[in-house]
Each structure stands twice: as structure tokens, then as C-alpha cells.
Amino acid sequence: MNVDVAIAEELRPDMYSHLNLTGGKTAYIIGNGTSRQGLDLDILDGDIWGCNALYRDYSPDYLTIIDVSIMGECCQAGYPKYNNCYFSGEWDDPLGFEEYNIIKETMGVPVREWIDPSHSKVTMHGKGNGNVGILEMQAIGIEEDYRITEVRGPEDDPFLFENFFCGTTASAMASMTGKYDNIVYVGFDSIWNYDINTYNNIYAGTRCYGLETDPENTRLKEEDERGWMSQTNQLKVLLDRFQNINYYYMKDELSVHLLTHEVLYD
Image 1 (tube, helix red, strand yellow):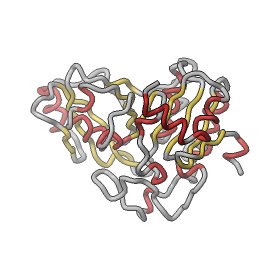
Image 2 (cartoon, rainbow, N blue to C red):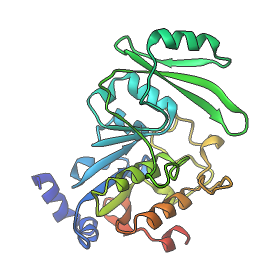
Image 3 (cartoon, rainbow, N blue to C red):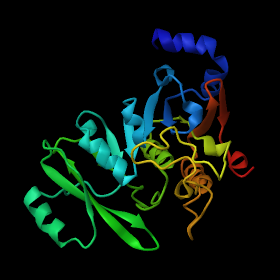
Image 4 (tube, rainbow, N blue to C red):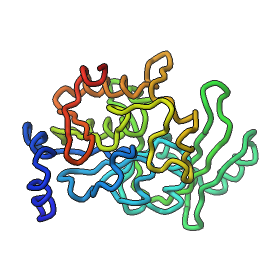
């Protein structure tokens, strides 16, 4: 344990005493709710699993992205060349540029490109919604040594985490590794401070993100026929599936609480 973490334990005993109840290895899932604004992630004694645009400000141990535009931005910046990433979509069979240019000409929808001159391959990803289908294709350039792992569910249910939000996807990927006894949600403000009228995200209004009041972003409590559109239901899936893991949520750096079904449905 480094000196900064030792000092943090002394100054913030409540935070670490909760985790020490079970001991073992801890993963922190870093959401982008405003409660984590200003938190020094380096004091967290465990693996850091980041979400979406966190990479702009901090390089976590693992970065999870499910939004296609942010995946494009991330790849265009070259981030996956040196960092471990979990991305949604198909990445294992990219196109060469000659094949991509032929396919591009046949597309009946606009194609947005996230391609850098250093890229040697291209992956194609649709963007739209369930009501009208694909509205736009996004072409994301990659290099062969990019460290990208496709998001997939367990072997017995590969689509279990389909349509999960980014934070719950990151938590699912961390849980599936089997490495962790504790998983702590940081910046998951909707667990304890949900406001349907506000898009609570520290990147609101920046590139690839809507405004705080954008109705497209205030949907955490809506559900489709499978209930996956509810973050509450997604967290319940994880609690039920990985009963050997203790899940916690952090309100601030002095406040860590055990996540239970009772908390989710309170």
C-alpha cells in the first residue's frame, strides 16, 4: 500500500472500514455522476474500471464504453493502443480500407468517420433507436494492436447484459473476471439521488454528450419489455448473478454503503 492510500485510510476511516468488513480484492466502477467531481481516484486501493469519457481526464485500469460516438472519439485519439478497453459492438473482424470504401458507397444512411491516418483497419457500427432503426453508420478506425475486448455476457447467457448502461456493463465485466470480492460504485448518483428532470453527468454539454436537460438522457427509470432500460433492474441482475461479490455504492469519499435489493427498491 502506498503512502497516499495509507494517509487516506487514516483521514477517511469510514470509507475503508466498510470495505474491510469483507477484505479481499476490490474493483471501483467509476461512473460520471457529479458526486465524484474532484475525487482523487488515485487514493482508491483497488482496480479502477472507468466509463465512457473518463479517459479524457484519467487512465483507468480498464475502460468500458458502450456509446458508439465515444468509442469513435477514443479510438481516434489512440487511447486503446496502450490501455485496456471493453467496447460494445463487433471488433474481432475489422475491414480493410479497400473493402470499407466499397461498403461505404452502398450505405443508404450517412456515415460518420472516426479515422486517423495511423489506422490500418475500420469497424462499422450502427447508431439509431429501436423505433426507426439505424439512422447513421459510424466508421471507427483502429490499429491491429489496439487492446479492445468485446463486451459479452457469460457463456450460458451471452446476451444477459445486452442494453445495459455503461456503468452496469463495466460492473458486469469486472464481476465476470472472478477476481473481486468487493465492487464499489463511484459516481452512480442515480442509485441514491435520482432526478428524472436532470441529466446528472459531469460531461454533460461536451462532445458526444447532451445537455443536462436533454430529454433523451433522462431515461434511467424507463423500461422496455425486458426491463433492461432501468438501471435498478440491471443492478438487480448483477446482485442475483454474482452473489459471491459484495457490492457497495459511494455517496462521497466519506460515505460507502452496502448495495442490497432493499436499497434498490426503497
